[in-house]
Image 1 (spheres, rainbow, N blue to C red):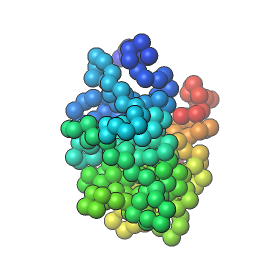
Image 2 (image 1 turned 90 degrees about the vertical axis):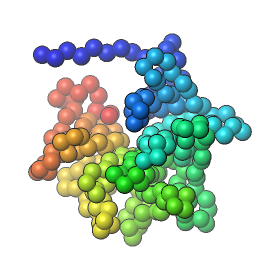
Image 3 (image 1 turned 120 degrees about the horizontal axis):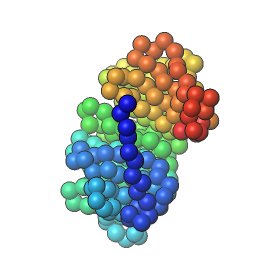
Length: 238
């Protein structure tokens, strides 16, 4: 039996806050931890912390970090409770994006709940009110409304695989978006109250929920397998 050993990283090691909301490993191997009080980069030895510093061009917009992703240019995208940030790792400069009344090329909502990148380098942004795709050529956003289906839906989870975007929503459950045809399909018997979505290297789809544990949809997609407290999970909030 293979054994795993865990080491705790905490405030004494330099972590800015103990409630870790998201974890991401960038292309260079650095680990990024979002917390309720700042963004942290860990190089295996020490932490560098990014927090709100009004007036600074290298400051994130809000300390409550919700999600992290990386684009094809090596920029780190950081979603927070109030604004989306693009951190240029080569310069340390931070650019902020937010909802603007009357501007349809701005974000659909300032609360950024989920982020992911696709194989073409596009950044997809799930907000408290709909889905957005970043258009690098115009430095603006395209809102993916699909006749109103996604406009009012909080999107807590995003995952990409083979031209498909998997959206974890709170009310409508798990939605598959086929990008080339801009086509939506809701997955049968999907859980609701979704908090996170992940596609593994075998193309299995994992879904974490607020109150029903983890749902696994294997590649053949016959049905979901549920892992909850009855099956050994320590808590059904994932």
